[in-house]
Amino acid sequence: MKKERQDKDFIHKPSFPGGAKGMKAFVSAHLQYPEEAQRAGIGGTVRLRIAIDHKGKVTEARVIMGLGFGCDEEAVRVALLMRFNVPPHRKLKVLFHHVINIHFLRGPAPEEKPAMLQPPEPAGISYTITPAAPEKTEGKPAAGGGYTITINWT
Image 1 (tube, rainbow, N blue to C red):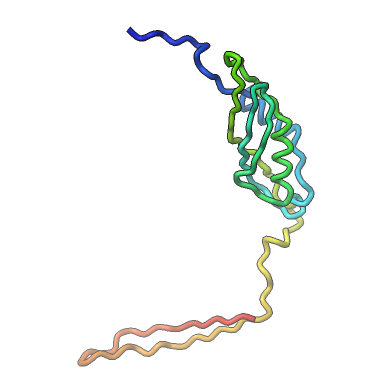
Image 2: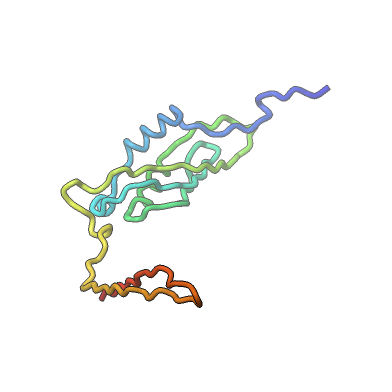
């Protein structure tokens, strides 16, 4: 017969106070949208890998997938402010790793368009359309034609 394991035999994961809703409220309360990203109209998600020590403190935050324009640094700053609830683990000091996403959902202001998203204006474009000669085969009439389009820009 197998020995029934008790709850104290397992290592439990840390949890944020209030769960996912609590974490979302914490991030929205502490997140400051970077000025540089705001001017450029950058929005998206920064993915972080955080390390949580045995006391529930975030000791390390590393960017896995970032946005740039100051969003990565701001996401790391907010992640380092977080505190988790960690149940005791039989006097073991366990370091937990967790992946979190921090969203920057602000886009460009309606009256302005970011310069980085607009393609550069070409100095000049010229194009040439040349009818292609149909291919001639022995004893058969010429089959279809076509066009060749050449585009040059400077």
